[in-house]
Amino acid sequence: MSTVSAHDTLQAVLTKLEQAQRLIQNPLPPPDMPVQMELLLEEMISDIRQELGIKQWPEPTVEPPDLETLQEWLLDSICEATDGCIVEHDGRCPHGHPSWFLRLGLI
Image (cartoon, one colour):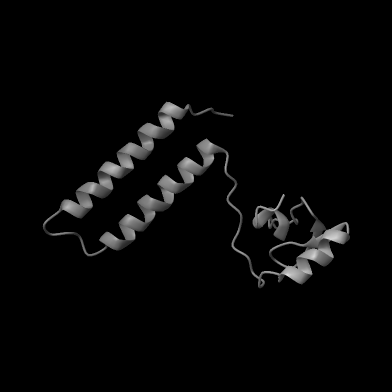
């Protein structure tokens, strides 16, 4: 297992920011500039999230619950994950989706 220091992460993000800056300042930007910018931004966000220990959850595949549903789940020992699987309040399903309580930052 390799460990990356905060300095290394910041250096990588700085390099990507400089690449993005060059793309923007280019008087004749490449036709795929939006795609390149999107990839650079995704990489930088991922690097920063990892350094800060922020989990990146998969995108929900079901509609968010309403307040009444959340209140009902609070009284139960189980709730839905963001893909509809049944999990504990602080759990994740086998597919990596968190409970709605985790996703919404309620616990």
